[in-house]
Image (tube, rainbow, N blue to C red; front, side, top):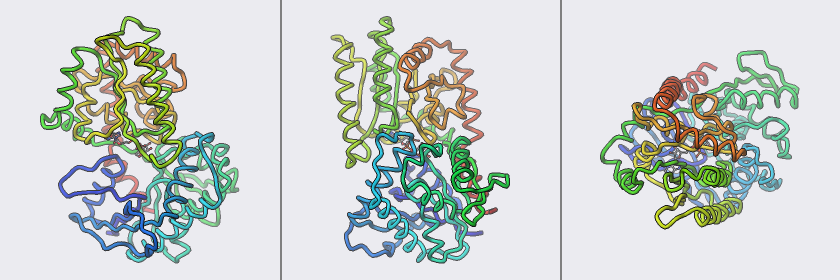
Length: 457
Ligand code: ADQ
């Protein structure tokens, strides 16, 4: 069988025998562990004068890790610039936070070509190439220009915006044309796939012969929907394992019977943290009966902190947390706990299980694995309630959650009230329905369907 070669911006640091963090890493690692293969990407190192050749390979079990370094200029133009300064905000409908610079776009293409040139040196003729995410929209086109004819698939972890939004990026036409060089493009949800197809049909004069296939730019390629999932049973086992429960037990003692509302996110403006803080404030203002009885804990480790908009959101949240606590705290109660740090994954799952409410309200999100992890971590006999943004990809599947509009403070506040008052029968019913969906659309199903479709052509 053909060898699987996974390409992503970063190769996750993996150690044999230890679980990986994050959905991408877990899903990809499972696939590679099962079949063997190569994981290719940026080392995370910045080295000027770097050769376009990969660093020496490192084998972890049956997986070979191959990395390249980036120069400072590459990092600034590709990673901080076009990928995270332009694409990330636009893909998440935050056009007001996007900037655009043709030099950075050229840098993005240059790094995609660098990846292609370096990857070519490790590719065998029948390898399957599986690229991940918005950093690598141009990889297949660059490989094809280098004469590589392997089967190539792209899975986009973020949303794909409607054509009118995408077109705020001046280079939109070149971007979509480059994506068409893949044989298979996978999206998290049907609206994402439809938005992409709309662009190809209306802006690029393409055709849709059916079965997710599109014809445009002189090529024919497939599109499909592959919602990423989680390992349901492994998460519940992690949530229950005594060895992981130290923090959760300390928290339980400290809560003294108060109800916990929990949010866990990377610190990113697309996750809607500021709007969430304000909705919690509204909830406290509207519901004096819960004062002293509820605690909202937001865990949000900094991410991409060398990008200005990320520094700004961090300062803004610190100010908001202080203001809300200043307004409502009492001598024996501080309503909002804002933890600007990361937790080992194993410690996080028991924390989910302690929370009466999982509050997941991104302004846009490709999927949102925290929502799925929260549901999977619950005790089925006494589960918490998921309050979920309608703009998270996960809301397409988890419709038994309390689905809210993250821009509607009063609506989110009302959902918190409803969640805290919900009967055990209703909690069990909603949780069972969501667990069913999670088992069907598991992480294994995501990976197996994508790889099978890529292989089938
Ligand atoms: P992210 O934007 O990173 O992923 P998400 O799907 O929520 O968002 O995944 C985050 C992962 O990091 C989860 O597995 C979570 O457990 C972990 N995590 C978050 N905060 C943490 C903390 N404080 N400590 C430890 N771990 C933490 C991108 C897309 C999403 C898409 C995923 C997978 O933006 O929309 O769901 O990829 O496709």
